[in-house]
Length: 225
Image (cartoon, rainbow, N blue to C red):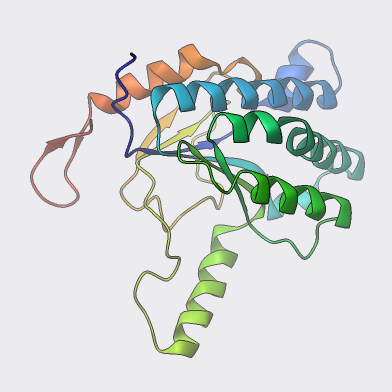
């Protein structure tokens, strides 16, 4: 049986580079997003095999609404299709799916797909797959802080587990309003590999790099793994 050494690890990925991947091949940006959807399936499967506890994928930021309407429609269509076609496989593999971010601006059909996917995978005991859509870390922190302040409880405003490893594909080196609170002590890994080309081999390489780092958390050094 494969040894799973990442059973307490929370990995977050900013999936960047779909559009540039397509443009470099003379293809429309939508082709890059479709190729990126295949990468999601590969990386989710690889994460489950590695025994990773939680995987959070940045699918659509609140700032992405500024993109052309056709591109936004393509992204939401791909997300809806992923939910509808993959829910049985996720549930069968013990993967629990959650969607984080705002829901008040999503189409009813997409909300129905989200609700169904979350319900049908709720019993999963393996990988916790979290997909961030219409997500803004600043908005989440402000909303959570307001709610906690109203109750007089200031402990852990977001109530979520810290990110251990943050990966950003596509060559850019910024967080782009993604999980700012949870990434306070995350190890950061920026790779030039564009998201459609990121696969199980690239994930394994990122995990090896993470395992070689020393994490101090303000104290003395300890190994990441």
